Length: 149
Image 1: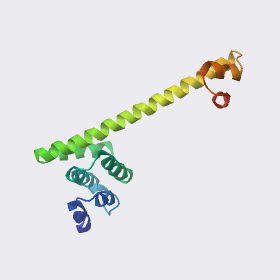
Image 2: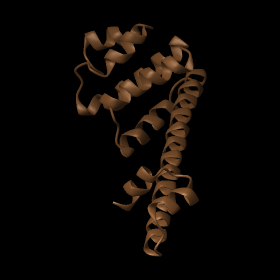
Image 3: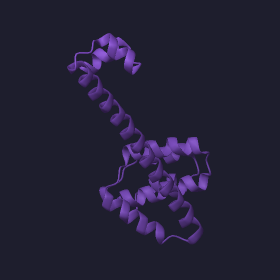
Image 4: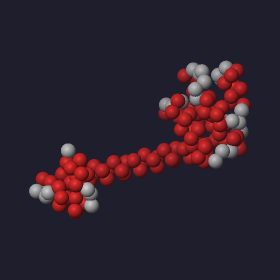
């Protein structure tokens, strides 16, 4: 486990301490333990969802685990005492689901954008004017022109 300063931060139930944990000195081999301790802190602090999400996002920016490290983290969490294990695992699953939802939303937006671009290009190839395409698609003429670039 990381040094004394990091251990002292881990024992605090302070949102700033949790955020700073990601910026403390740690080695590659300590990353899984660091995230486990961070998740335990989040559970102990019982923050509202917005604050929890902010801290989690900050931490993930600086301490991104590989798939293998995430598997090790889950394995180590499963070895924790029952109540704490359930709370930490619930937190992990919650953030995984949110990430999947965000990815799906982004995928749908990209799909719609690409589909609209193809539609506009096809209409233009068939001889429709920018004005007519704008009327049919409810896009502005400027948006149609951008899609034709």
